[in-house]
Image (spheres, rainbow, N blue to C red):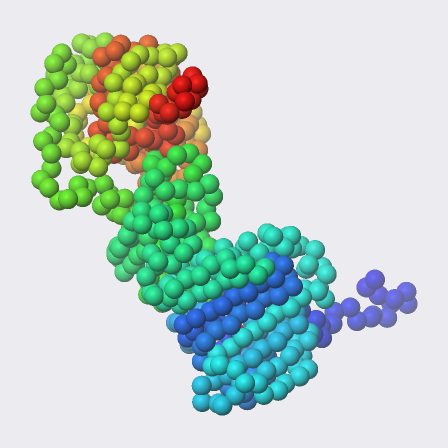
Length: 588
Ligand code: ADP
Ligand code: MG
């Protein structure tokens, strides 16, 4: 009701009591146990702790206790710390531009205290004893001297017990507790110089040594084997530094929780940076698998705004794309470095100079246009091998075992015998990888594998695809698919990648553009274009192959950068080991 019957107005807008206002604001900072833990860890780190112990009961709902050996709070300031906007970390507006602590808002302690029963004990080094206080609903109810080591312990009990509306939105203790442990893991990685101990429900779930080595902290979380396999990341560009660890392509997870990103020491959740990271692996991880990485991103204060989220979970970059680029390149460089010959020998003799009897060489050009049977062109049997082959490193070749082609199954799979049993190759996926490498690794301007068309083909472009074609035109041209605008809704195709020439070109190019349209264009458009062109230029399932074609396919696959996955991340081969075969036949 906005007015009484006789028209006299009644006050409807009122200023909330400080209590209620505090309760509302608290909801922005502390949403669930994991957000309380984050604030308490931030405070301990800001206090210069070298050792932090975190204990939780019932996922943090019954108890969260954080103990640190940091500098402590002076007795005369203990109450002040629980006042709203009370902070020792910034003094004025000008400081907001260069915050070097994790906290700065002065909101955490009052917010947590407002939503729980809280007990704090703290001692600074120069005092003989510490001080202990109990707060109920944010108000100090008891305070006393207490003997304690230097540092601070904060125990938060019965979180949200008096805020049932909030409690309703929480998950079960198990899921809240998991979030807490995952968070603590991110922090342990970000601060390998701090010895973390996490005890959940009485069980020790994480212990790090605090020796300063990120790989050791990583081992404590993911195990020694994974830690040993991780690659070092160390990259700088445009004033952005990226360092840390990233998994080789053989290390991956079913979700993204093993991706930790830190910006100037602060753990952040950033979709664009996560995408940039995933993108760097794009073609090299199996489908639906996610990379494992812990990356520190360091940039100048003015490049990043940390004050955009009440719980400090997000940051804003002045130039987000530049940061994404740096992340992607740092990973690409680490993956690339891991592929080089480990013992630094001179490169092996290029395979191209090995004799390949029975394989005709021909230079690309009009003469090659009519000559080859389409499928031969597709499998690359006619290309000038000297122009394309590159010396692979030893490790690349070790990625595939020696395979002997036995036959074809279902006109789709190549059956091979290997050192340990049987291997089934998906002919399309394998050829896709071969074509992708051939396309993506050749230098710009290299015309091998490109089929110029004597008569350009007119392609009707669907309205929805006009923009896509425009955007990818230079990338596609570099891949051999040269097009030229022709009126408003058509294009002239001037040349095609060799494999595409054997098909209904217009149909293939349209399908290819449709695929590209659905892609995120943000990063690596060339890689995406290459993967798509590769897909449309490769042998399909259902195509009968001769023994020689299959042998050639296996040989070509061996020499690719990632022979076990197609550019979209699907496996190129599956393995049935001798053991498994013998067991099936009851021989064991
Ligand atoms: P902020 O961290 O944004 O300053 P908080 O409400 O989290 O605000 O903490 C208020 C103040 O209490 C801090 O600025 C700091 O001086 C002090 N404080 C909080 N936790 C600790 C701790 N574990 N050790 C030492 N001082 C602390
Ligand atoms: Mg704080």
